[in-house]
Image 1: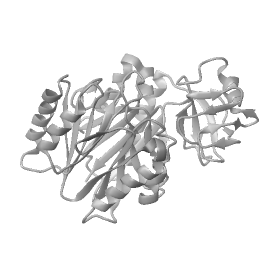
Image 2: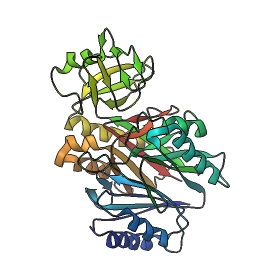
Image 3: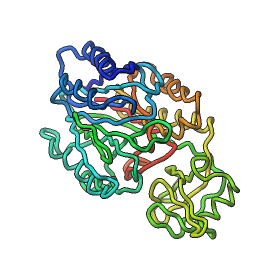
Image 4: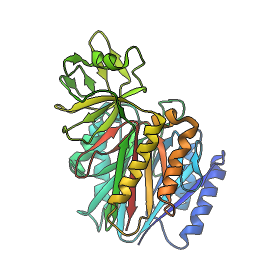
Length: 384
């Protein structure tokens, strides 16, 4: 048995919102006991109060979570300042949490610590780990090496999906949750092991403007040359005097196949000719400059969800989890509700929940390493 219960409230008061969510959960739960959970909520709440109330109700569950730039849920649709609690109930799957701290100073160690904690908690299903969900602080998330630490423990191509904690109006200070603790500059993981099915779809909001070209000199996330130009000249060749940040992005083809992930370019240095991205680019990759508009974003949402549905290996989907970029929300404006409408149309009877992130995590394709993405919609389908 594997079931997922979701509660949601838009009440602005912490205690009232949490109690409303728990009352919804109790009706669905009956006499069963949840094993783990994910808390997604607005930055405006006092998160310590919320976690204490949940901990008093379910003191033994492995709980992770983070703040958001908006929520996406089958209960209330798209919301900007709500509280969403997702609980997992199962007697065939083990679900364990882990955390690591100080990712801005040593992300590799923090990722390794979080993964080790998850694995060490497993009892009956050790050796049968299937996938993990990651939530992390946004500061240096794409270049901190947190993924390197996780891969050291779980394996280079172990599937990990998730998003970076967010807030509103480009606020950088966010919170991550582990059990009844509010943290910052941290990474939390939820590891699933046992008899469970999953599938995923990942699609970036990228409309190509130019040709694919090989990356020359690159250091981690800073590009110095692309093709025969400096990275700065490469951007200016296509976009003129336009602002680089957010308006334009790079599709990165890590192995020169047709599979790519998307990164944005928040910094540039005309004197050095460099452009710094919000994630790393491997040696030997190709890139293609592009932009995103509402039509591209709507299409990529559909392709992400439909791709996950087409690849789902089981008969019954228990829940869909979504991680969508806050940049997509910014571009869509009031039409951001179309992402909820697409999810509801494609998954009419499936409960789902997710949030708007400052960056997403996931593999580019099956049996490949998970990476940091931008302007991307990540779909994760789970079932027994």
